[in-house]
Length: 328
Image (cartoon, rainbow, N blue to C red; front, side):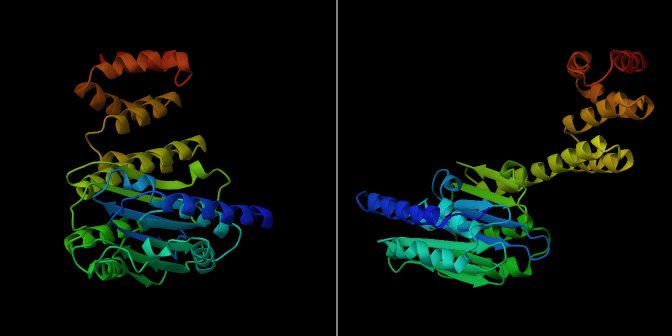
């Protein structure tokens, strides 16, 4: 959806207002290293960030499917996020967007901002008064930036790691963050991390376009914990994809997705129980029984949950009775 010129003008005025407001406050710097990136194959957009600051993802990272991604940090002005997305949604490139917002900001010397648009064009700014070591490195479809780092080489280490990494966009973003930490990272330490990846095409329902939206607000080893959460996120993606395929009556394909989820998380009974319920609900009880038996052998309470499902219309009472009879 294109924004009107009036809307864009009001957005710029709002940034001026916010910048003046921040000028009257003694804001603390959000020392951060981050990466914004565009996947040229899938079109996915993402931003990942770590800091020795509580809940860094709530103010630094912004992204919208088919539009762009933004990281706003140092003496952070969060309005660069939503306003940057507004301008890129209206058709402005990352460079045009960042240039326009910087012109409306009286304190660009303490800002550090990076943007990537849906075409993979990037733009970054590191203010002259950002706390050293502070700089950024851009490459094809990505920008790595950092401030208050232990070493000046952190952004280059991130860029090199990202460029050489294999896997999907989320994996490469994680590798970039891990490279930054291995290079020294934030001179004060580490506390929070966020990873946001969205689709390459807008869906009209942004909440359905987030592939990964993960945050760790306060942790002694946030990147280690983010690795774990990213794995869990992938497990549930396979399970959700299985549900979608099942609604399309693509049973073999759905079972492949369910099986992948079970393989990735063999101890997660949720990944076993619901495929079993789905199979039983379409009269494939014999296929469902090995799954039910695996669940019930570990946790008897799942039998009680199964008994409650007919009332919700998820499975027939006859199917439940048959399952319980075969188990017992």
